[in-house]
Image (cartoon, rainbow, N blue to C red; front, side):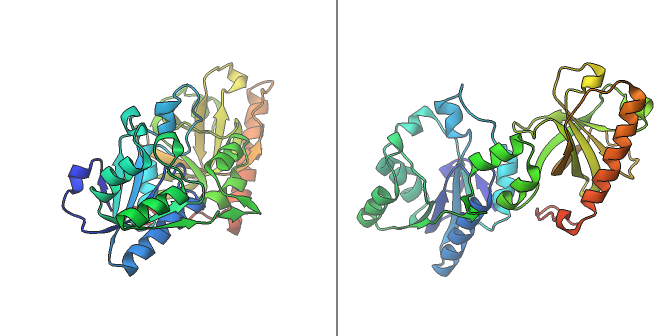
Length: 322
């Protein structure tokens, strides 16, 4: 997949395209179907399949003080989009000037002049342009005027409820990571560099942990989780704690993962933690011995959870060989 940040990056490279456009936060099941439909339509008409998305998220520009934590940062969003087959991803910088464009001005400048769009696929609730005036009906009218077709994907549902970024965000923040999986099509994950922590895990407790330098915005509810830990393209069972370590009087959020049956030196490495199921709340223990005993129980529970067939992880990133 070609990732372009400006139209000039792909100038004269596209003779005709099928475009889907959106924010794609989380690249969830609804987004996946949208991208796959655009790709299949492009192939059927011998067009280039293009996903158009934005960085930063429009809400961050228009309502900077009231934005929710986003499910995927830009790097992961692009990585996930690439899995579903588009030939081009146009990552446009969203600005207040762009927000002032009418639907027709945006379509003309970016999609017709820039991408030679012949077909447009949008989500059931997507709007574009100033005042969100560009809905399915107005875009269809523009299509009749400018010579492109518009199709709209029906809502994608899981458990009789529409899949949405808001629903996923609420589940993750409630610690219901297992319930978020069918909406995402994968376990929720965070990524970070392994940094030196307080050095209590191995020396004091006997359970060494990988402490992550946090870059993601959305984190599950504090507590202990069964997780898969991905290190250098290999996946290991693990148990992770999210919280402030109340037994030791910390006050800053941390993510620490104990990787089962692992002894490598991974300081400075980037790892991914995939959250499978919540084991318990974070709590303050009366002392080191009580905490160590509970960690032992957590590890046993984590191993049992991750050994179940339904907890298996499948990594489909292009750079993953496992």
